[in-house]
Amino acid sequence: MASFFFGLRSLYMRQLRIINFKDKASLQEFGLYKGSSINEFDVPFHNILLTLEKNACTDIIVERNYIDKEYLDEYSFFYSTSFKNYGRFCTRLHFFHGNIAKHLGINHDQDFIFTASEKDSLQKSYLGFCVIRPTDRNRISHTVIKPHIDNPRDVFIKSQSNYLVNLNGTCLTATGMPFMQQDSQAGLCASTDLVMLSRYMHEVHKHRLCTSPEVTLIANKFLGSDRSFPNRGLTIYHMLSALSEMGYSPVVYSRVGVPASVNLEDIVYYYLESALPVILFIQARGCSHVCLAIGHDFKPNLPPRITRKSNILRNSDFIRHFIVHDDELGPYLHLPLLAKDIKTANFFPKFDSSVFRSSYTHPWSFENVQAAIVPVHRKVYLSGEEIESNVEKILSPLNHVFGLMVGNMQPDKKKLFEGVLSSGKLALRSFFLKSNDYKKWIADMPRVSAEIREFYLNAELPRFIWLTEMSDIDNLRKPNNKDHLILGEIISDSTAGAKSQYQFISIHLPSVFLDRELNNPTNPDHIAIYSINNDDPYQAYIR
Amino acid sequence: MVEKGRGVKTTVSKKPIYELTDDDKAKFCEYQTEATRQDVEEIQEWKAKSLERVGFLMIK
Image (cartoon, rainbow over all chains, first blue to last red; front, side, top):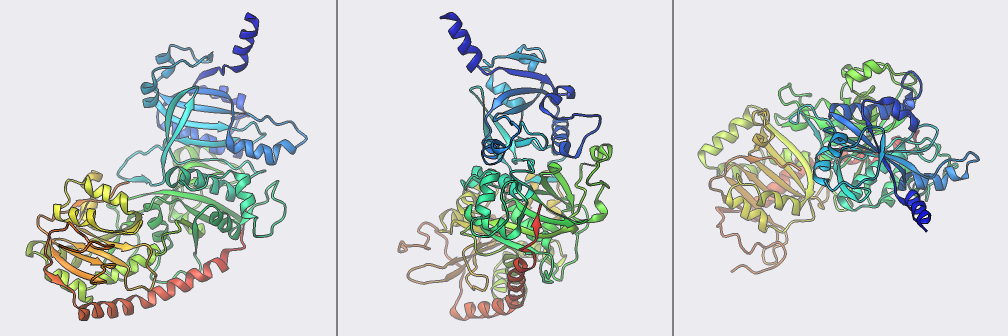
C-alpha cells in the first residue's frame, strides 16, 4: 500500500528545480544555447535574457511538464502528425531577482517541491516567465517578462498588462507585453504577431484569445490559400480577415500615397497612445516581415522631428524610436524612425552578438515600414488623423467658436494661452480611451478644477472618446512625468463620421469650457460656453 | 429643474456666459466643413487605396 502512495507521489507531484541565472550551460538542457555561438533561432531567447540581465535577474525556477495552450494547439495541428515523436509538454522558466534560492533555503541545481507560503516576497522578486517548446528549433512559446526601462521619462511601453501565473498553487503576477517566437511550422511571423496581440487584447479588453493554428484557420476561412500546415505565410488580406473574425475593425495604412497632411509615424503614435498594439509591415532586402509596435520613446528636449504647416506641435514630433516585439529577434526592441539611427549592421543569417548586446536596437528602421495595420475597436469610427485634422482647425483664429472662447477667457489665462500658441509651443496628444476610464481619472485628479470635474463626471459620453490634450511643450520637458501638465483638452465622439459636423463634444481651454449637448431632448445640439474659476494646468492622462 | 434625458446634465450648477445661436453654429459648421474638406477627402482616398496597394503582399 505504501509503495502505491509513493508511486502516486512520484507520478503527480511536480518537482521544480532552481538554477543560477548566470549558469547558461544549464539552459542547454532545453535546447537553448547549443554550440559555441548564438544561432539565429536563439536570438529571441538571447534578447529575453539580456532584458532579464538588465532587470538584475539572479534565479530561474524550472517548471517541467508544463501544458501550454499555444503549443498544445500547434502539437494537435502539426507536430502530432509528424513521423518524428515530439513531446506534448513544455518547460516553463520563471525568472526572479534578489537571490530567491537563498531566501527559500534551496541550493542551485537542486530539485524541490514547492511549499512556499512566502508569496509576497516571491511576487516582489518575480520578473516573468518563458515557455520552452520541445521542438527542434524556434522554441520560445508564450512569454511575459518585465520590460527594462533605463529612464521612465524617456520610454513608454503602452501595451502591457498583468498576467496571472500559477506556480504549483502559488499565484504570481507577470507584468509586460506577451511575446512569442514563431515555430516556423504551425505559425510564421504574421500569425505569431496576431497571437501576441490577441493575448494582450484578451487580457485588457476581453477580445477572443487565439493560438497560431486558430489564427491560420480563421485567416483562411473566407480567402483561398495553399496549405495551412506547415504554414507558408499570410497576406495582409488574410491578417485582416483574421482580425475581423477576432472582433476588430482593422484599418490598413500604406506608406505609398500618404497625403501631405498625414504622417505614418503620427498614426502609429495615436494608436499606441490608445494602448493598442500596431502591426508594422516591413519590407527590406527581399524580405517581408511584420513586427508589433507596443510603445515609443519621448525626447521633448530634442528639436521637433518634422516641421509642420501650422505652428501647432504634436507630442509625436519628439519620438525617435518605437518599441517593438519582433518574433524573430526578441521583445522590447527599439525600432529607430530613421535609418541613420540603426546601430546593428547585420540581420540574417549571422548576428554579431557583441554589437547586438551593446546596441539593443532593431536592425531595420521605420523607413522600411511599408504599411501599418491597426486593430481598431468596432465602436471607434473616427480615426486619429481625422481627429487631429479637425482639432487643428478648431484651434484656428479663423474659427468663430474658438474666437468666442478666447474672447471669454480670464485676462491672465488668455495671455498665457495666446503666448503658448503664438510662440509655437502648443503640443497636441490625441488618443482614444473608454469614457468611464477618463471619468475615473478626472475623479481622482486633485489638480483639476472642481467645476471641470463636475462637467466631466456628469457628462453623458459614448463608450469610447477621442481625447486631444493641449500642453505647453516646456511643461513636457520637466523631469517628472507627474509635472507634465496640460492646459486643456478637446473631447470628440469616436462614433461620429469623418465628415460630420458633430465630432467634438467639449472644448476646454484655460478658464473657459464649451459644452455641447448633442442629444438634449428639448434643445438638440445645445452649445454653451462657461467661465471656469481656479482653472490651473493639471496632469496629462497616464494609463 | 432641467428635464432628465440622454445628453442632459442634471447636476451641473453653473450658468453659461454665452449660448451659441443658430447663426454661430452655422458659421462654425461652414468654416469647419470647408477647412477640413480637403484633408478628409485626401485621407479617405488614401485609406481606400491602401489595402489595394499592400493587401496581397505575402508575409513570412
